[in-house]
Length: 238
Image (cartoon, rainbow, N blue to C red):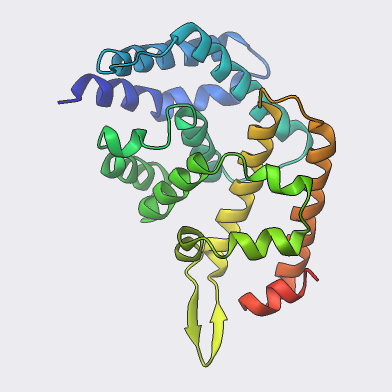
């Protein structure tokens, strides 16, 4: 039913296309090549869409997304190759809408791609994480007024977050899973930073960016002394 979409999506998230991103800083023509593959994908989606995208406008947004994302790794972040691939998938899908993955039946497709690329069985976790990060692209708004404690307390009330972090009760203590935390929070910080840096809203971007960095610094510090206990983690932020 969506064969053209699947084929163009496969090309867009292939290792060959993904690896071009690492050459963009030295050769901007590599970004143009990625945009060509992205354009083919967007045209295949538009062919099925009742409300077609303005593809040229969307491509320009994606170009800025890619450049802003890459700029972060010159200045702030260090992540694994596999994490960068998950980030790449988020960048590719973030402007397609929150229901796009379900609407076009890409769930299992994404799981298989991620399992194959990362040589792991974490495809389901990463797919759920990508969908969460797409649906919650403006969490950064909370940093304008809320403390780190208040932000995390509210975040932990979200059922999908609790499931992703594998909250579980044992011996009367609520625990979270270390490996899930490590993946969740580094990708949350990066995607919120990219979302903030590419927003069209008229705000003091730099001021909020400083607050995001401060909040995640406090989160990492509290995490180091949490023993993976949710209550102890939150107490470390007070």
